[in-house]
Image (cartoon, rainbow, N blue to C red; front, side, top):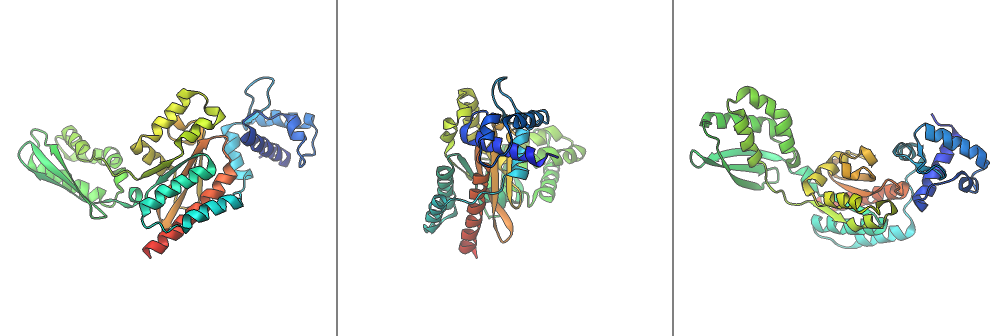
Length: 343
């Protein structure tokens, strides 16, 4: 447990570093109007906070910067959700005053407004990614070598794909596989299908199907379809203006990942939670490209069910309180508009 003085000093260092992107020294903290401690006292507390893992010292003679552990403590214990300022409220309200008639227009425009207001990268995961699931799967043999894989979704969409049938696989074995998939995958969101097949169902197939490996290859082809893109991205180049991303190799890995729609969809889905604001800092993100970034997400809902995720990606030196306040407001407004459209 940190003392109240340590909490105050950690809070001051995070706030100053977010604003300046420069290491923070004890003298600059002592000059703050809300601080009544001497530079020597502050230095001792900073040394203790560094020893506890909340601060780092990039150079021997420099001040301190927050560690990822320090940011996590700041978000969880020190940083309230900041009220959105008047100009930002006007920008968001102007957007919602426009009569956007389609959910896709809503997402595209919301992503643009969000990146403009925050100066970070905005990522929105559309409703279909979460809401569309498998209703029925079928294999229709054309001859002894090929078949049509038919997938019917919960929205009534039908997708067909021609696949090869492995040699020596009987019709009864194909039927057994289809029955197994329908018994275990109906109702599973589309973006989870392949993961579910290769983690949970593969063991059961190995126990019951003679030509297990050949059948798994067939399933990989059957479900290797291109889903309609439901990721809406804006402000990707905002990463280039952040001081910590002057290293072009570091920026390139981030920009490359932002173009990988399936991977980005998975990361956004994993970062979301049914309710409230979620913050993933640095290494908490499940991809190396985001190890120096923070991803803050909020969900929007319809009738109590999460339909999608709104996210802001930026450096770990992010304005957490401000971004959390904006996301909180935007997610509630998107929820309100969807209720108006679909009630």
